[in-house]
Length: 513
Image (cartoon, rainbow, N blue to C red; front, side, top):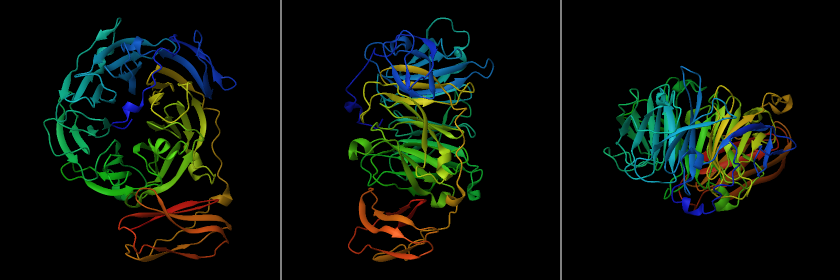
């Protein structure tokens, strides 16, 4: 949820979730009704296993939920949900998913607030909040072993290099944490970009560096890169969602943070109709970055979109296409495991998408293969319903935190979903939209479009704010016919423009400066 937007989330449905801890309820005929519950949930290929309300997890009053993460005890194999609440972080044993057990809570360090975020490294949870002066709490998760009655826990350490932070990401391969949207604290100079912390000794975190060269960062994923762009193999690369208020435009950025004292911006990725570049995650082969815009539904009346970027060449990463869910819900956090995207889309709940569609030649770049709607009261855009999910347990269960409904433990049924077949006639990927020349330009620039088969084509130019500024072509083109397209930038503001060509079997983009 973006800063300053929480005031819009005025409809609370505390107490309307099922008053039942758990009992498997299969998704049948598009619905699930848990035993003992008065509510029925829309679903497809996802079974209900268990639930705890916010009150049952130490919430109390009108406290709402927010982020969620998971931990698997390496000694016992037990699985735990780390559940963010306005008043702290709750810990739930979900090893028996139909009988979840609340173990206790780590209170917020300062005061109750909507935003809290949790990640895990080396059996420790790292917890940040937008509450002023909160810093980063470090919690030793091994304290959960053997707990038989709810405990009020204490942090093992506090990092005060920043005071507040919207979010935190961890690269478990390198042992560095990346706080984003931070302010205050003992270290200055990071602004609201990447605040880098060495957590290789979890209980003694130390400041490592800053990257503030691309404005406000709302969320980030940082990895030790092993993708197709061999120029960056072994480098530590961050994929940042830079959706800050006051920027000229929202975008996603790729940053090399290998040298913490001298991080460098590799590229920016723009996309049409940008409302708020919120969050994203790499596919497991690192070829694509799948992302979400949190405010395009409320700002422009768009239906729910999931954005797909081609990042196989990090220096020339670019927007590929957007998947239309056909719903109106605002989208929020999502993660990728194997071929599936697990997206928390506020009022439409957990949506599971198949990434194999990207290269299948299908009209849709992704496809919805399963869902469970944790919020049956509305499907309108806005900030109610599910905040986030965690799909990385070996057991295959997925835990979901609903802002008003609490913890849901779900069991996606994905084994019988067949792989997407790729039709030979749509695989041919000849370069269709050649680079603009001259580029950069202060006047007219020319692009050339060549097709491998006849089809209807639209070629549109967008400015940096995602606004359509020109249509270069719309209509039918024959196969192998090279078509010259001219964009006249004379008299237009200087800056970055994106040309998007969309046909029946392809979509491509080029940038003009």
